[in-house]
Amino acid sequence: MFATPGQVDDFAIAGDGSIYLATHGDTIMRAQADGTLTTVLPTGGDGSTAVAFVPGDPASLYVLTTGGLLEGAGRPARLLRIALPGGPAFCDQAVP
Image (cartoon, helix red, strand yellow):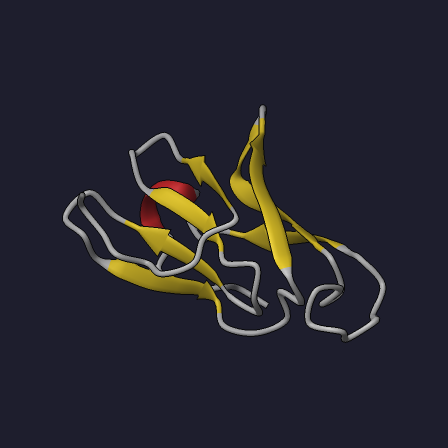
């Protein structure tokens, strides 16, 4: 085991080997091979349930949310695009 991120619903592996994690909560995390965990999206995930990279767009991470369905929030589900500075190999924080 190289990281202990807590609850994870889905993950996507970037070209540099880091793993982006949907926490099914408000946040998106990044786990690096050395075990370092970084918060990529600190809030706004609203039940983040899936993360993915789209071929041809390595500088963006796409996140599907449930709108907090399981938490009883009742907000609409959303598809978020998180721009990763320099692409996924260099991301250490979310870009508004």
